[in-house]
Length: 151
Image (cartoon, rainbow, N blue to C red; front, side, top):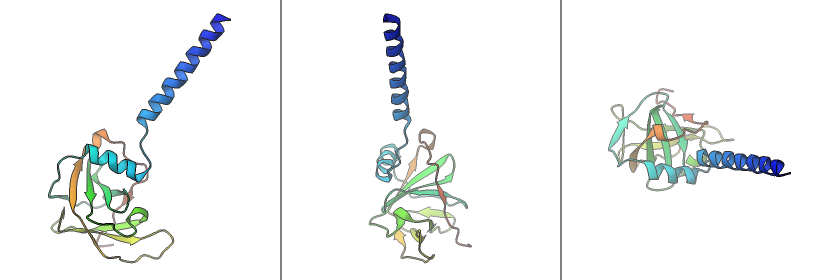
């Protein structure tokens, strides 16, 4: 009977460890949780970053988004006020003069929302750009591609 009890306890401990490991490795799905995590890990604000085609992005509520010009390079973009529809947008465009995305100069533009026809909404100015330590972050599975001006 003692051997069975120890086997049951060992299995219970193993399951507990697996649950704890999964919880620690959990990537938050809630945009507010992800924004908090990104803010905690972001570097000091930068003035700009290079714009590249097929840049990937994820909304972090209606006042922030994360973009990845390259898989190993990410940036947190914060806006001074809510950008209508950003949190549920299917497509956005990011302004970029001279091939660079600049804070306080360029803007985000929501192009389409689920269930509505594509349309251009007012631009949402970029207030802050902070680099993200991408190797330390688990990238979300459902990143979207930024629409290019030529499209």
